[in-house]
Length: 136
Image (cartoon, rainbow, N blue to C red):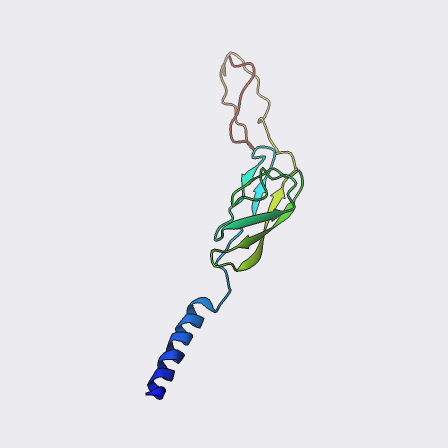
């Protein structure tokens, strides 16, 4: 009878250790991202915990939430320490790269209108949207 009881205790302890004995958290600080003069901020994506602490706090909307808005002025690696649901603690990092290079744009070749070619198509490159001036 003691033998069966010991087997039962061993099985229960084994199951408990397998389930709770590992203190490895399942947390994430998200993926690295690049911002530039057009996209000047990004939302960081911490997940997997109850409490969050981002360092450095400079450039963050709130260093104690999972998803702060980051607006760094230079490339910054943020360290995220998370306390998980089961009390485990783990640190991850994410880098926000700041591309300060101005975009390269080209308004196309100069053209001359004359009586035989009264209109021309203008071709710009290097941007996402364009505004021509004068408009007419």
